[in-house]
Length: 383
Image (cartoon, rainbow, N blue to C red; front, side, top):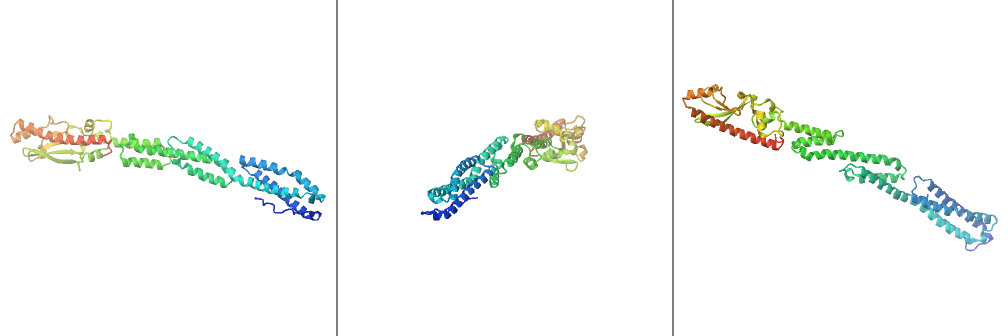
């Protein structure tokens, strides 16, 4: 759209003989004037047009249109073949038009720059609007706002900003959506180190949090519910977990462990599959109970089913006397009296034998409670 400058010139010496040549020069000037008018009209039709370009355009149009009277005089002089009488006026017009052409070209060439400058202000406003709308804790950097706006700006500039108005709203909504998504991720990721959930086994916690971040339909509320459920299950272990953790697995039906002796008679302790309480299978809370309450809650069963120590006296195991973990010596356990009679010993033998068996049970009790305390300290995460 650029206009070339006028290359004709007026001879230094003019006369009636040069009138024809001067008329041709005038034709060039008329064409140049029209080119300037047409160029400015084309610029005026551009949309959008920055205020700075509009201001320069109106100023240049006023200057260009102001020559109309001069060209009327030239036309009259040409009709009367009198152009040769005022060559200075033609020279002045050539100089003025060339200046005008440069100015018109400048107006046309400055449009893009003025648009970029004008819309940069609009871009700044958009950035401020998006930043203010971001959720607390979400920064523009965390959603790549700078890069998004830069790509948008380059695209709109390439299109001459003709689609800016229609593209502005979708851009803002897109960035707001990104902000909300980042906020969702931040809140879910934050649960990984939330004191409320720190006692959940780390692998379980990571699995729930990562799945929540990846699932676009998951919310902080739904992930929190999953973590709470995981902690609830961890806080109330099933019997198998207690059995493995406390090393009280009964194998088939019984588990028998050697644990000392008394006057040559071996002592062992027995744990059977029915030595667990019904509550031991997921009904005893670690966090809501003391160590002692947990201990009794999972192991204090009916007397004859309790974990117990046994004194191996005689050849028939059915006659061996017991001391139970909670119930101690049962009043209806006739095997102590039978052992006394069989061995022909006095009551002190029974008292001392029971004391030795209680000492072994105390060791077991201390070890189990130590493990339960460790589980309580860790919220069951070590089980």
